[in-house]
Image (cartoon, rainbow over all chains, first blue to last red):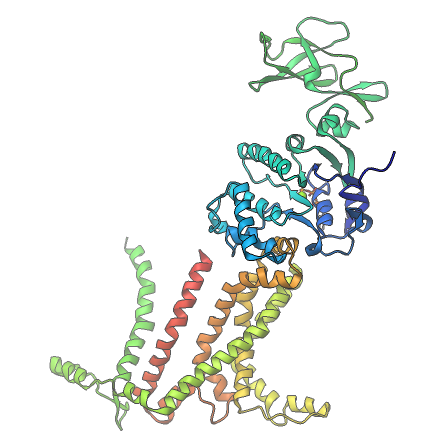
Length: 328
Length: 292
Ligand SMILES: Nc1ncnc2c1ncn2[C@@H]1O[C@H](COP(=O)(O)OP(=O)(O)OP(=O)(O)O)[C@@H](O)[C@H]1O
Ligand SMILES: [Mg+2]
């Protein structure tokens, strides 16, 4: 078998420390062309640092970063075909929306007329038609976010980096924006790399994602793959809720929706009492206090509801092959 | 109730006593004419003659002094040369002050505090002494020429020249240029520069496209803060300038103390103020905009 096309971006054993803190600790990672890739991890795990090294604002201490197979060490940020959408948006306050969007195009010495039509195209793309003359401080948070997006994609970068692009938006707008972002990425066929600490967001938007912990990558894969087959207990716990049940010297990670709740004793089931009931409309989440374990069970609200209340005795079970065996 | 009124009235009382009344007196003086007497001007308001006294006083006022100002070449050239000195000094201050303020804003928090202190420190010594120190530096056998001699360079005749006045102005007003510039540069968001570089700017173009335009309010504030008082500056041209150095501050002094022409001194002072109203208004608007 011949080697497929090289990945668009390749991190090879990249390390970065700031004084005593090791921000990125030996990351190797491939991102394919046209992919929507998410970097997921808790605060301070090195996501922004990894992204800033790709954009050229930080240099790796060791390791290499390849873009289209070429080592980009030493290439300053302004020469990298990589654009970043900043977490703070970083819109230029002295320029109006149209000039903000045109900023990168002007640097490429694109003719005036071409710039004007590209700006219009971008405004339409992010649904801000007619707002080209506004100043950034006359925009809402969601509008600013879309200007920042339009500004970063206008010069057609080979990869767009988005650092927590939706952190400042409220939940409803965030969900809408996630869907828009996915549609946009498909339409443009551009490679997106998004940084987030919101696992739902990563699962929704990404084709593939990397779960990071303390500067290291714990697992890379499609959201479904990671959800169903977490590599270890950390990933299982970080991506969605999970029940970690000991099985020999390893753990079986079983998702709450794979657990079955019964009001009668069952073969192989664990006995316990209901400690919490939370109703979510489409599903109900039960926390069961069992012998030396707290089990979480999620039950879709279809068919007849279970008549349960806190303190009731229940039995919790799962299929023998449910979930995944993980190392601690 | 009483007390709140007192609080509201206090600043107005202050303004009336220490601003409006002196201004009115100067305006009145500028409309008088000189006489050989003490005080050396007429008419004087004599309230003991009642209304007649007032009308005699008002009848004695005239704008003749102002007419004289516009015809006398000396006043006009003093006026223009004051604006010239202030303009040249402001331009030099911008060229020196901007890089200093920019450099300061790039340092870490600790170093920035130390540098800021360095800029403010001279204020804690007497202004007059600092200008006298410049005499010691610039005089023919002064520090500057001793240094030049060590380097086998010809000596410079600077003291009592226009160049010395510019040096003194630039020295004395530098903090007023640096501080407002530093204030805007220091709070500038670093990510804007990164965004500019990310979008294809070299560090230099990022400076011209982003840092510089965003620092214009500080630049305007610094320029006006220096230009306005420099036009009327007296001590620096008097101590460092030559006998031919023309500046309005000196003209006012000469009219008042040497020529005993109080009306002319007052009229020059008011003409100066009238000219400066435009930049002062600009400065106020600028400040209001920055504050909002
Ligand atoms: N310029 C810097 N100087 C010193 N330490 C830094 C610097 N940048 C990052 N760090 C440290 O490196 C570690 C990783 O930071 P990074 O910003 O990459 O995390 P992150 O995953 O993006 O976190 P968050 O989700 O909070 O944005 C942190 O411990 C941080 O304090
Ligand atoms: Mg971050």
